[in-house]
Amino acid sequence: MSHAVDPCAKPGLIHPNDALPKLLEQVMPLTRTETLSISDALNHVLAEDVESSINLPPFDNSAMDGYAFRFDDLNRDNNVTNLTLVGSAFAGHPFDGDIPKGSCVRIMTGAQVPAQLDTVQMQELAEANQDIITITSPKRAGANVRKQGEEASIGQVILKLGTQIGAAELGVLATLGIANVSVFSKVKVAFFSTGDELKPVGTALKEGQIYDSNRYSIQGLLTKSDVEWVDLGIIEDNPESIKQAFLTASEQADLVLTSGGVSVGDADYVKQVLDDVGEITFWRLAMKPGKPFAMGKLDNAIFCGLPGNPVASMVTFYQLVQPIINKMKNLPQSAPLKVNAQLMHNIKRKPGRVEFQRGVLTRNNQGDLEVSTTGAQGSGMLTSMSIANCFIHIAIDQGEINAGEIVTVEPFSSLLN
Ligand code: AMP
Ligand code: MG
Image 1 (cartoon, rainbow, N blue to C red):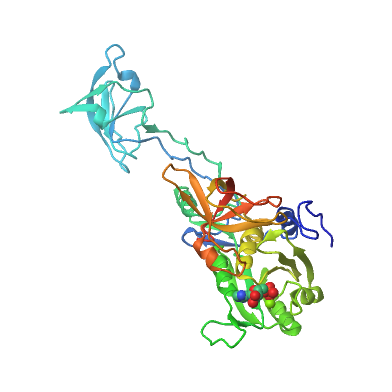
Image 2 (cartoon, rainbow, N blue to C red):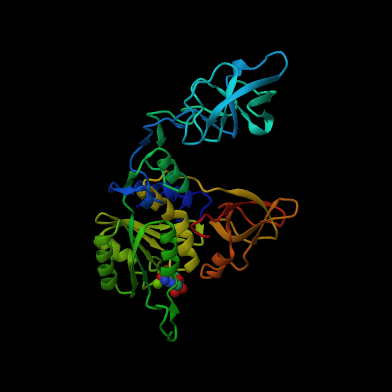
């Protein structure tokens, strides 16, 4: 497969901004749904538009503790009116007595405003003397009354299909009296690490071995992405083992994620095996860290092969796999928030790759944003991700950057915090 190449990119490398839409083209949103009680629905994605079967608010009610009256009963000439108190309306206990001309009702916040009345004066701006209430300088007819249907009316779509249910949405659903909702089932992800040098934590290392960290950072990213995941462990650099792992993974998952083995080294078998059992596109991305990235299909599952270097695997997950998961979840794609900040020191570099340097973003005493890198930016130095709270985005054609220049910064989302 050949791809258009950014003129600024090094030969054979594709700009991640060009790669992402091509990756997303291969992904279909999941269609499996289930019905959940709203108490279990947090973080799920709505599989239907939610319409209101009631008006919001359902009846005119008071926004204040005070006195309800007819605006027309007030004196026009002198700004001060005495009204006779005829009763009280509490939240949940409407007043249903007569309200003659020139009288008023004591009313609490949330209580239904009697049908004959239209305005509420807050109690701090009224004077009570036995059952004579003096209203001074009322604002306007309708003041302090929350009108029936002012927020939403019957039949209106309140939450759209594809909305992720957060705390506010749970409250909105409850406000509408909805007990159960139809949501998309969670995306299932199976993942494994590849590499003969990798050992699980809890074992001793021999010469030339390292601990497998990617499975844990990926586990964290997947948990925060709110998918169901299964960890298939460490798979050795051997085509037959990798093939078996792929087959097991694709049977149980919508997305198969691996780390390592997608480079051009002699033991990088992922590409070869996938060519054999599925379809694969191998990408050399003009991005740093994270040059090698593989994507393909295995039966009904999507496959993403992350680079082995720990920072590269996290950055490619964040920049490329997260949008893929979001599409599978039926979420709309949203561009990450970016801000401008002043760079606090020089950055040496050569043009040719988009760079995601790990940075620390702060506000100085003047309230302006400043950013520093976390120090050495090796793609194996995972502590840089832990210290950082943002990526400093450096454009593909950018050369060295001097202290004091304004740079683009992407604060870490909750996925990385
Ligand atoms: P690879 O992409 O397989 O060529 O690996 C690139 C680098 O990342 C090598 O230094 C590997 O040892 C290292 N690496 C690969 N997988 C992992 C892992 N799961 N945890 C930590 N380091 C890894
Ligand atoms: Mg390897």
